[in-house]
Length: 323
Image (cartoon, rainbow, N blue to C red; front, side):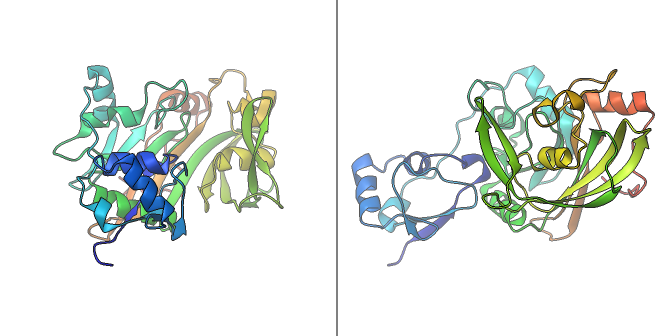
């Protein structure tokens, strides 16, 4: 059959129901018609039959038959962004060209909306719109993590960047201040992680049987006596809360991370906030294919803690040529 399309789920469409995804992209496709397409197997997700209520994930491929693909594609409505939020994003730009934007996301700003989250980065992206296309998310950072976050200017660039992240062609480096000093000073944490809910709170814990593979390399850059250490963390996988859980596994939870470190994650005199920063991303440019290295300076409470502890703003192993 000709005219069949295979569309990739974008990063900002994660956890949508399949029927709502169709409503976005093909608004004139009726509910009854979609139900028939699903029932007869003409719509598939990653090659498999699917139900209307299936929760889709970024990177999955949806088979769209010709009689649905003729509808107009989804265009996010333009929103009015408050001036303070517009200025926040403009001040956070680390790099931009015709294809992508890199931001230094501040800690405390959620990337996407959710339960009880009304203010988030995704809701501000019209402030960075320069044409018909609204910038798109291609990966995420936790609300309390600061640092480099990439945005794509078009759907095509978003698909290329999402593929790079999914196939692990991107190198990410994080900085963390941890309570205690890890032994050995550098190494590799290979502990599979699984989600667990306890007392209404979801955490990820080490589980070699049911967990998903999670690997992190770490290097101690500097120590503050025996009470704290500055770590460089290099995740080789991308599990939820991987760096937080793996740091706690070492016996050195990230400072301010009470969820994984309890009272032992709090250090007197320092802000009781998560000290985790996405320091650097190295990725092939989606158009030129040339290596693109983007570095985010410390901001907010982490910059204050570094100054208070007398730590350098640049790691000993960093090149001065980073963007």
